[in-house]
Length: 367
Image (cartoon, rainbow, N blue to C red; front, side):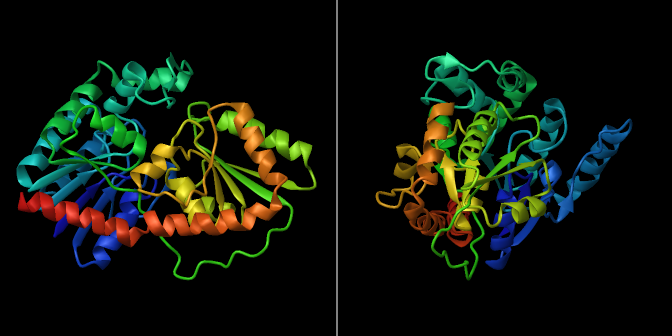
């Protein structure tokens, strides 16, 4: 197959591109590297925010168009798969739709349906936009609502969702969201994670317990890392001889990985039901994820026994309690680390996930 992957989210397309190429497909990945994370890509399509940056970016997109034809599959990471206003993305998407066989939309992050469902339908107990029946009012949530509700972005998202051939949801939350609107098109495929061929053997745990937290630029409160960081600092202060806390902000992906390596625990996304790419990558290295491990996460994977994620409720007390229990239970650390590796190998191995994408693509082409 000839496959075009447009855009990037936390290494999803980069990982998928690598494995699909290994499986014999012709794959072209075009992205901006997910901004400062700077993931690898075949063609860099990043925008400089200078006086002439917008015009130069637009010209670059136009010049690329002849190369974006005659693919079997075009997969876009988000309705806003280019660094352009939604109105300008419309004709680009229509061009892709006209000159290629099948279009796949990914549901892996912020879009209209995610904002609308969590804000207005509150179909999840908690999310980036609601805590039970209460709508969150932090500035980041308000900004996203203003960006995706009753705007050109909403119109673009609806147009793409109605006209694409399939929607791939990468987490339970996004799958549950698109089930409300497009159950016939909506397919759950887990995030792909690179698996080390010879993972480091997990030895018996010895203090200090190393806690890692990555802070996303401008999304500290929105993702709940403000609360998680506060709880982690409290535990580090309470047990100074038993805990070391590493806090990282806005660094490129390779540097991020190097700092994370050797950690025992990662704090990941307070308002999520599931671990996302950062949490899963950490788990693949034997790092225990404290964050989203709700029953729905395990159910959608048909997992009944292997449950290594330390699930927390979206509040300070829950995070502090979970961390303190880990600090005071060193005998549990090794098993949780080993189970974390096995969990990712079982459900998120990049080769297994790529095969699920490949099967979907063949089904679409045969339809």
